[in-house]
Length: 223
Image (cartoon, rainbow, N blue to C red; front, side, top):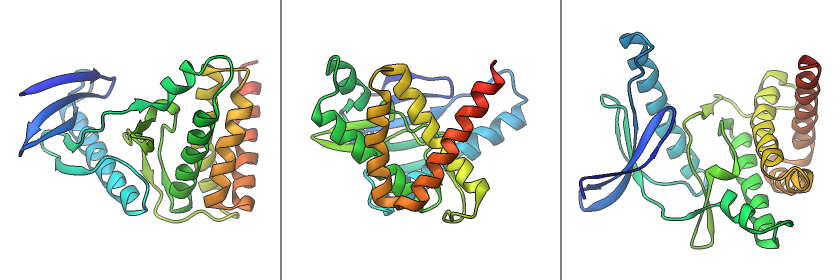
């Protein structure tokens, strides 16, 4: 196997590669012709390093993510463990009109992991069910391309950090609404139950209140 492309996104291409005796997943950020070369190189390099750093930090917290094997900031590549699993979004969509208990449990676990990240001052950036992968019954978080390490743990008085945490959760809620409007609130409640278990009820309530404020502001803006 030389290279087998498995996905092409807006920011990067994903392909399988045989590397040092392993089949690995490579995420390579390709140049953007509409940006100045120097600026483009800076953005791609910074995002590549940041993504790898966040994945390593996340794994240190005990959250299942693909292992990072190699970071190439010159060619803007990350070589990581290839996980052949099923996206949680696929399980949800195949469960019919009502989400199964298995799917609900996975959503709760996902909320638990995001809460653990937030408690340690890390934003996933795109915590949707498409970025949760089920491998042999175990849930992994993937795609940290939009992640951010905040540099400090959140407190209930830190409105700026709470706002960023709320933006992360709002992405989850919006994705659930797009997938299954009728069940979205139920599923988001299960997600929040897992979230509260790791970040704590008081802080979770403040983040949830901030989510509600964000959604009200958006509704007001589009009228």
